[in-house]
Amino acid sequence: MKKETVLSTVGQHYAEAYEKQYDIKDSHAALLSYKSIVAEYPDSKEAENSRSQIQNIMRNTVPKEVLYEAQLQLALNYTEPDVVTDTPPVTRIALA
Image (cartoon, rainbow, N blue to C red):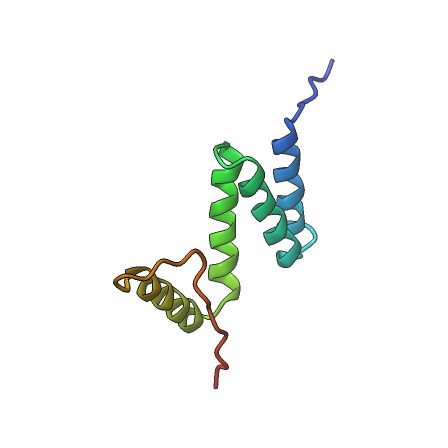
């Protein structure tokens, strides 16, 4: 008799996100799914894995210069004295 693996709800969500990323090749849909997992199950192993997958997708799709500028702006916004910010603006820059 073959033993069937039963996934938890968060495990099912993660498997679906992973399928979107690697089988269907829809990075945008995968990002939205991973984001949802992190929001709904922030302390789960799947949330930790989702954060890693989000980083992987970002590294593979966003040009290095754009990531650098966005990260620098984010750090500047959070280190500016006497300024409190929840989500700093990040502007897209056109690459030549």
